Amino acid sequence: MQKQIVLNKPRGPTGKGLIWLKEIEVPGRWISWSNIYLKLCRNWSISKPEVREVIIIFSEIGLLEVSPAGVKLNYVVIKND
Image 1: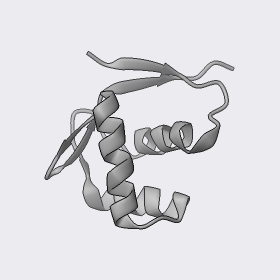
Image 2: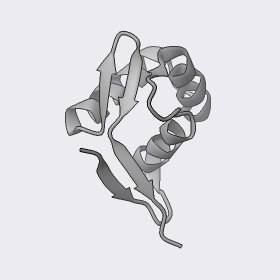
Image 3: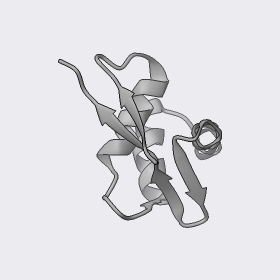
């Protein structure tokens, strides 16, 4: 079951990170680690090990699944204007 996240104006790294992950998602497929590193390392200006820590935290919350192949998102972003 996918969680629904409502983000009016995403503030802070968590909201922005979740939106950036959603931007590179291809429905029904895993997001590769290389794509995750490209997007998050560049936008947050952090290293690959730090990105891995953030992904693990998101995984522990239940927002995504982690595998050696990549990441699968378990949430839907609903934007309220």
